[in-house]
Length: 208
Image (cartoon, rainbow, N blue to C red; front, side, top):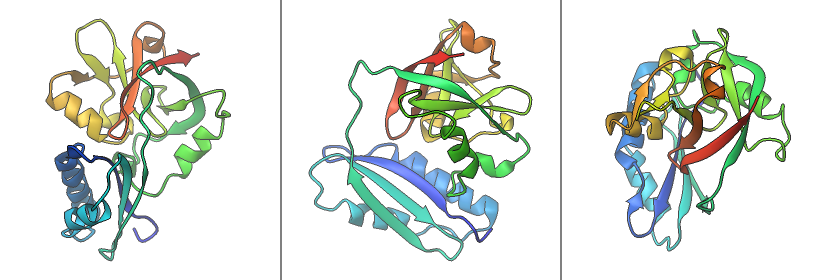
């Protein structure tokens, strides 16, 4: 377990503070417990120190390792235009649904990097990954959501082999999304969205 750190990437808004802060800290604590890391007791204080005096939106990245080391970096955050629609393509690279580390956000990102590298940035804004059974899992940096006409967005179960995304958790708790498997054929019929806590929900079109 010594070859990676846990990650949380948050958005900070000067007027409202950290977006979904409680869910980020809960996931960090839960992840540390699951893999035997110490508890991240100083995480909130370090986050607050990092944005002290910030007057514009910030992308804030926190890492936490097995020795309880916390590192926080910040960068200016620019939101997407309101009418943005991302182009999504499907990777040949597959996820292994039995790999439980896929359920935790860590610096071990080689499988996602390989998937992203299959397409140039002008070919795809995001790349969707399937598991060994051909079920849709997640994007390389986003959770996926399908509007299938039921009135709730459908998002794949963690057991398919994917991260418990913070935005995903929030939408499920708000009863705006439900868990359900998504096949490749499903992607042809519903309206697709991708999203994460940093950028929120993004309409998408998939190229199959």
